Length: 242
Length: 242
Image (cartoon, rainbow over all chains, first blue to last red; front, side, top):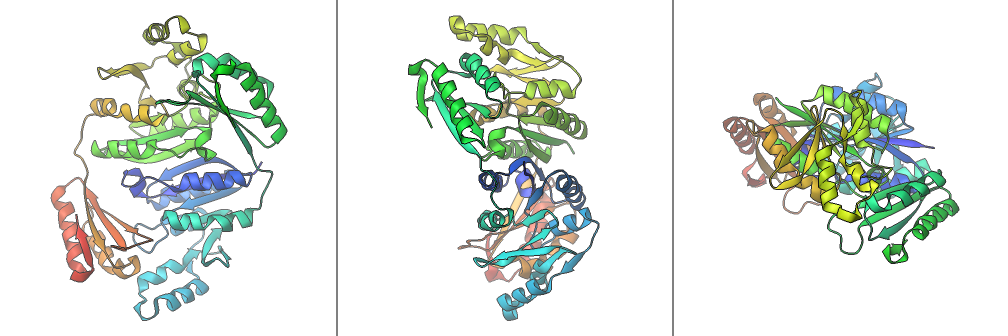
């Protein structure tokens, strides 16, 4: 099973100035590629902390995706953190420099050129639809924090990682609460070990009180678990099966 | 400086089924109490992983807040994880049991009673406005994942933690990009060491291109840094000062 982690970087997230919007986008994309996102860590703009997390998370997962801290200002320290994690230094990448010179023309400043920085030994991933490249250092994808750009990088990631057997997901919605369905649920969980079963109560419920999810890579097994659970409930308590 | 961490628990978040809504709520609340949220970790419904994170994060921060995994079903393992982190076992708390018996009456099941579980040695925090108590184990607040209920716990947290000197936040909005303002920004950052300066580019900008934030506990110093920065920009490039 291929695994991934995400490192979300930025003081603005931990101070509550803005809400992260990238985790759910990455999580959905990885899920559809059959990659398990096992851990997300959110930290401040601190080089040492970033370096330590990158070192640990990149060792323990097939891929690590970082989000944020890649601009040219003092609080953008992700490139430095990744370089430090791998015991290397930061270089200015010639082809990115040249793109910046073309783009900014005579308005170009030293500040703009900082956007060409990358850890020594990193590679650039690019696609036709996205001319500005993405820096990849070993198994670490360094992504921007701005949600629109983060999202635009997903097709490139999908292309590079390639698809594995995707996860199949089904659901049962019931009017019963978790305490009531627990015995039926426990039985399905123990009898269908290859299916991951989730139970999500709804607070301000109008239509249903609990949503049960059934996930796995074997479509037949997932459907069988879902149907077994639905059949174990009183018929009138089943609102919907998906 | 008082510090906190958050541990966000749930397969549904890492699979992208739903987007977390609790981090930003907690972050804002802590900020207003003068507490620095230093780290957020998001993990799957796995007891060992939860226990390990609780052990580490509770040692290295003044408070740890967990979110999710507190219902009665098989995927609710937070109570067990916290108990394991502190080397203790889980008990059924009599006053919560009694509330559950009253609430469910003759519909009560063994499943419902599981919601009275807590780590041995934990205490209950409650307020008049919220009769159902919150379990607190040492410095770990065990909060529910359902956003409406999570949010409803915030006043109780605020009451218990008490206010420290809050953070003051100001901002400057400019039409200039980060590369262009970098020299002015670097000067303000180095001349105002007690003020935390953030720079946030906007992608689909209509009104402004970059938002600069100035944060700190000393209102006078924060305003001075903001004004020094705004004065260093060409007047027509300043869209707004907050």
